[in-house]
Image 1 (cartoon, rainbow, N blue to C red):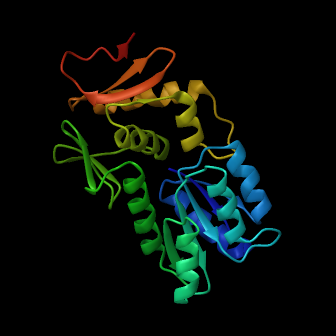
Image 2: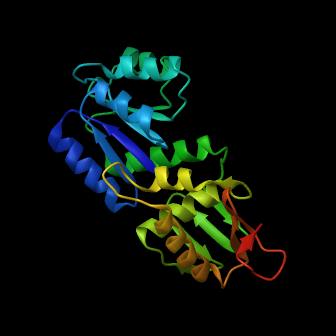
Image 3: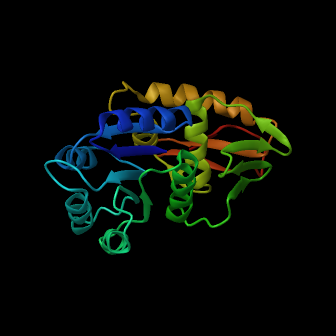
Length: 230
């Protein structure tokens, strides 16, 4: 899950981006409203954590421009103003959720997970593909009752595929969702990661198929594993 954190408080931005990165999220940081809009024009993000009190352009103005421009990226507002009218204004402007400062990191992550489920059209916190299961609350994968141990990159890619189970996910979408703007990703890294994921999924009936020129597809196997589809 690729997140844009828009926060002008340097210490808070550093702490929060590091904490979310340790939890397996890819996080980019923008320190003002104009930088946020530039980042959002050039990169895909799965969610935006948006502070309201920003320099150059306020969080309210950033949100208004996003929505007027047709960008429906999920937005979680952070603000020091916990008043009712402020919450109403943010939600009416198109925010998906609202969290007042100071906040608990666990609650923020829970709200991000809920946003991701809603955005994917999922209400159940547990997702599955055959014997592969994913608890979106604990962010743990299982094959039957056995926990599946993954690297952070593998976890991020499998999470994206499972949220889109039965649908094709392009390499460009995976690159945008898993790597930050400071990374130097390449399609070769995606292919290496997919190869490792396929081996780890062998004990299950969930399979990752390559659709040449299109991307990757996660679905339950109905035939012996080949790993590729033309």
